[in-house]
Structures are given as C-alpha cells and as structure tokens.
Length: 503
Ligand code: SF4
Ligand code: SF4
Ligand code: SF4
Image 1 (cartoon, rainbow, N blue to C red):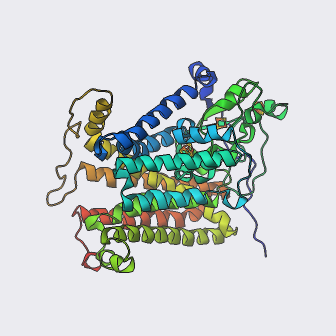
Image 2 (cartoon, protein in one colour):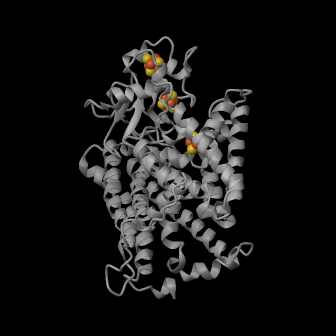
Image 3 (cartoon, rainbow, N blue to C red):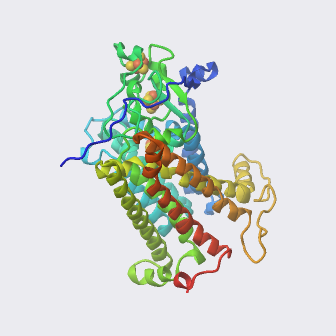
C-alpha cells in the first residue's frame, strides 16, 4: 500500500512584510554596478595567481607561503565558515576556480551532464575523500608546491568540465565544497527571490504545489534574469529567480539577475531571522541530508574522538592491523572517520525510520525532513572553534598578512593575552577548551528548537509536534553529550578515563 506524502500549504511562510536589502540604495547601486562582482572576481583571481606562483617559487615553509597559509589556514576555515553563515554562497560569486569554470563555459561544446551525477554525490565524495582523507594522509596541504599543484588540477578540472558541458556543472556537482556550502548557505539570513513573500515552494514536504511568483514575473516576456539580454548576462548557474525555492542553495548572490531584470524591485534580497530558513527548507534532498551527516561526522565525531588521548584504546590498537597499508597514525585517522560516518548515518537513519512511522510517510521523506535541524550543532561548534583560533593564533595571522604587503612586524600569536590557564584545579580545562565545549550546548538548544519547528510544520498541534520532534531531540542529546562532550571532558581530565574505552 503506498503511503501518503506530507501535505502542506503551498506557501507556509509568514505573510509579514520582509525586509529587502536591495531596497537600500547603496546596496542596490552596488548590485547594479558593472564592477560588481567583476572587480572582486578580478582581484581574487589575481590573488590566486600570486598564491600559486608563491607555491612554486616562494618559501618551502607552509607557515610562510601564501598558498598553504592562505588556502588551508585562512580560506578553508575562517573565510568559508563566516561567509556562508552570513551571506550563504557569496564566496562562489568571487571564487577563482568558479571564475575559471565560468570563462571556460563561454566556449562550451554543449554536452549534457549525465543525469546519474546530477546530484550532490560527486561533490560529497570529493569532500570526504580528497579534503578529509587524502589531504591529511599525504600532507599535500603542508607542502607549498603540492598545494599549488592541487589547486591547478582543480582549476583544470573546472576548465575542462566548463568546456565540455553546459551550465556550471563543476560548481553544482563536482566541487568538493559545493555540497557543504549548499547546506551551510541555509543558515544565512539572506535569500534571493522574486516572490511577493516567503520562499516559493517553501515547506519541508517533497510534494508542495508551487506558489505564484511575483506579478511582474507572471507577465514577463523576456525572463531576462534567467536568459539574459543582448547586453546583459542571465544567471550563469541556470537559476530562475521567479521560482527560486530550492535553487537558493545554489545562488551565489552575484546579482547579475538584478541587473538583467527589466522591472526594478522585483528581485529581492530578503532578510530573515538567522537560522529560520532551516525550518522552511523547500524540497530537501537526500544528498543534503548526507551533507549534514558528513559535516557532523567530521566536525563533531572526528574532532572529539580523533585526537591523541581522546581516541579510545581499542581503535588505536586495532586500526593498524585492520588497515595495514597505511601508517599507524593514518590508519587511526581513517578508522575514526569511518566509524564516525557509520555511527552518524546509522543513528540518524534509525531515528528517521521512527519519524517515518510516526508520520506515516515514505522513509525518504522523513530522512530528508529533519536533517537540517542538526546543522546548528555543527555551526555552533565551528563558530566556537573559529573564535578559539582567533584568540590563540590571531596575532600569527596578522603578522603573516602584513608580511605579504611588505610590513614586517612580529605580533604575539595570542593577540589578546593568554587564555591557557586551567579554569579548574587538577584539570587542563581552560578558555580554549570552553570554546570547544560550551557553544555546542547553545547549538543543542537551537537545534532542538529547529527540530520542533520542522515538526510543527507537519503537525496539527503543539503536543503532536513535540512528540514528532522527541526522537530527534533524544538523538541530539546523545550526539552532543555522549559522542562529543564525553571524550573532550575525558581529554581535559574533567572526568576520569573509563577503563572500558581507555584501559
Ligand atoms: S562551487 Fe566551488 S568552485 Fe564553484 S564557485 Fe563555489 S567554491 Fe568555487
Ligand atoms: S526578468 Fe525580472 S520580471 Fe522577468 S521573470 Fe525574471 S525576475 Fe521576474
Ligand atoms: S539567481 Fe541571480 S544572484 Fe543567484 S546566481 Fe543566479 S544571477 Fe546570481
């Protein structure tokens, strides 16, 4: 017997007026300027060229070379995290690899990308394999010339896919950070849309009737935002702002559609409450749910269990025998990663099964429905980690940045003084440790609230919403307290190491 899909109103978004950032003249003028985003694209592309040159011909020390330092100390953490939390995929509007792919795409021979890979699977596999397995094992991110080769190869793949296939195939389906960026972009309080209010097709259901786009779009003869005009580009990502919905996860805020649209004010950069888009995700996809699980594995499970004294003895003992072709250290690293992935996917799949039974919907619908609720756990943990890095290494970053423009000034790495004294006697728990263990507790509250709001969108009353959210609240508690906080508290000697795991 086929099970029903979730029924939702076509547009569950609030009817309240939304703030449109493009109504603010300076921003509107910037959006319409021909120098945006072109000027930024050129500047960052030149910086990329200089960094690759430095990789081949500059210092061999990773901490003194622009490509290793810039890409893996500054870009892959502070820049990507803070820009996606504040501005969604805005980085993609100026990314040099994306620029290379887009230029190549102008000369495409027009092949169609295979449907089989028209999802997030390749991007997610590349993220896990290349950035989280091969990178630490080979250490290519610490050798400047190898890092430069890595980026040249990625740029070449972007150029070749751009030349072969129509659309921004590399960015949508291949780039190793595209899948994580897509889900993280939903944390941002800004979304682009040409709907009178809310997001079109909003609501977590897989089957939501499309709502009506703005009146101007319904009568628009050109659809210039999407197709472009003779003297203006359309959306290079193939997005159609009149029905953004799911597409907002791909939108880079390049704002070319705003320049092309003949009816000013139709396309809005709508401001919403931070994180509120997580419970209005339209048509969540399986690949996105897996992206959230991968982010949680790496940044919660792996960070908690994968380092030194926090790794249980049985993994340290068994891993080198199970994976004999790697060094003992790499075998432990890979083992923790794989155990983490299996744990996160297994636990979440089990709870999603309970949700599917409670809702009487297909398993796939339940699997995708609640995944975004877990994102605040990762985001709060990552923001705490970022703040810890700024406090412990901010001076180093400034020293290096200044040296690149010829100013040689040594600043203490701990710009604001040291925070390494233990807070509690007999432990090693200090402010840096607190930044790793406390923000995620706030994330737990927010994640629980998002789970409740998602449940509320498919429940008839508050009581049922709470019951629907309960299995996910329980899993969040397990993830935060047992999988994450516990090994940290053991590592910082707040609690003793249990013999079963650390005997
Ligand atoms: S998807 Fe990847 S390559 Fe494309 S613009 Fe974004 S970060 Fe750059
Ligand atoms: S060009 Fe403007 S009016 Fe026409 S469909 Fe696009 S957003 Fe709507
Ligand atoms: S929808 Fe508009 S802002 Fe978004 S990527 Fe396309 S052209 Fe750029």
